[in-house]
Image (cartoon, rainbow, N blue to C red; front, side, top):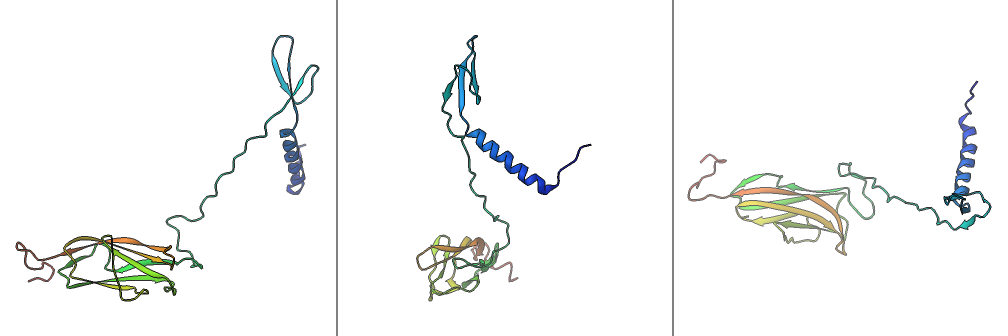
Length: 186
């Protein structure tokens, strides 16, 4: 009858096997050539065998796998970062017809800390605000066409703490061929 040992009894047996494997890896090897000219290797000494110095076993240590994924839920804010930051206005893919001014709003969670600032760029050019802690920006009479907005939170040393996803929006302006807004129904 086959009897299976309880799990607790397997732990000492496993430790003995692992220790023996480690000892075997560090054991001395011997080399000899038999009467037929065949080369043999063994960990048991044979008559006429010479001791062979074996290099240590090659090992590999994998790099740690990141614990977060791009689709992970936002992590709690820590001493160096923010949970989230985003551009809340204009909305992605908005089409604005002949705006006199464009208001850009950024949201940061948790609130912006003293010394940190939001940097907003419109088509690669940094927008200036009246305050280093501003979360709202004004652009007078934006040009027609597609535009890309970016926002990031930086600390006093210029390190990026949070990047908002870029958004694209469009501005339409009247032209000689279409002087009236289709959206306004003129």
